[in-house]
Length: 138
Image (cartoon, rainbow, N blue to C red; front, top):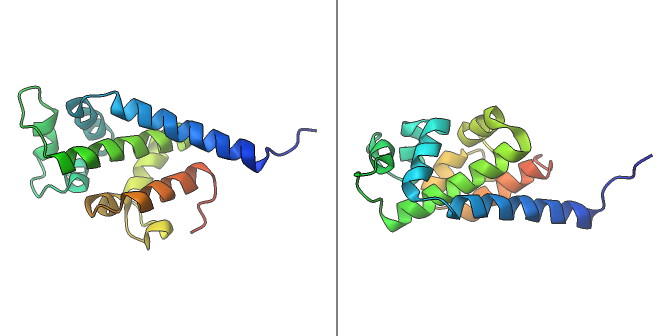
């Protein structure tokens, strides 16, 4: 009979997942990140999490000749993509999409989309990690 993994092993696995998602996110150009998030979440949600009132902004950022997003917007996009990768790796794309748009007990029943827009990045990272660690009880 196999024994349950130790908390040290589980912690090491979580850290490896987090580092892997981070490396994938920073290895991409912001235009590619915008394209991937647009394909996964849709342009309206990506524009919203980035803090733009223009629902078409994320599609403009994704174009090779489009405007360069502001530094704070880039930070939100890279962060969102990192969390997307982390949740997809653990739970799949459908669950990741539902996680981004659903009320989340770790965020005071706000959505990760809103929390990212508001700059509550540490809270969102903790909520994503709770899901990955299977401690998503709120």
